[in-house]
Image (cartoon, rainbow, N blue to C red; front, side, top):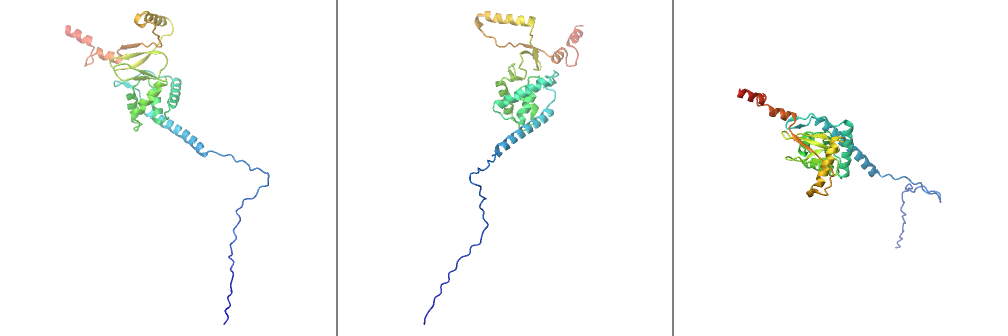
Length: 256
């Protein structure tokens, strides 16, 4: 018996696929350069601007809510505020100072700056904190203090040590004096004379300092006068008794 073996060669068939080759470009032709945009940088810039606008809008609401007449010792302070253009200029300078100090312009810090710039009562850090807390409940006292400290360091507000009591902050950086009520603690600016007898008296005072042996060579850089006494309300209270009658009148009746 003869066996015949047949070998069948099967050639695999590969399905044809569409070509994915990119069309060729003629030799010597340079590819056009497409501009590369940094989307992340653009987004960050937009986010930063949006955050700043949102912070200012929030601060506007806080300023409106906290824009009540400042008080001292439970009494309303009726002294006029700085003119709008002066106040706005102060706010711009202070915000730039906060930014330069490396602090982010959050709604809290913007509200603190606006509260100080518009307040003629020379508030303490605690007074500003108490005034804004209802509108900004998450704001800490440290935020208030650090913001005021940055402004003071930058020379954009003054820090007054009118003992007894904590430091007070003054947004008015023009040379001036202060009047302090020993009854309620009210503090007000007093304009410094720029001509006439006031300037002559200042020159005489500086001369006397230089002639004092213990102060010889002392360099005067600033002159600040503090006038202490009683404001009109405290003075009126001192002149009347608990019934509202003048004390002098009661004493005269008792003598009679």
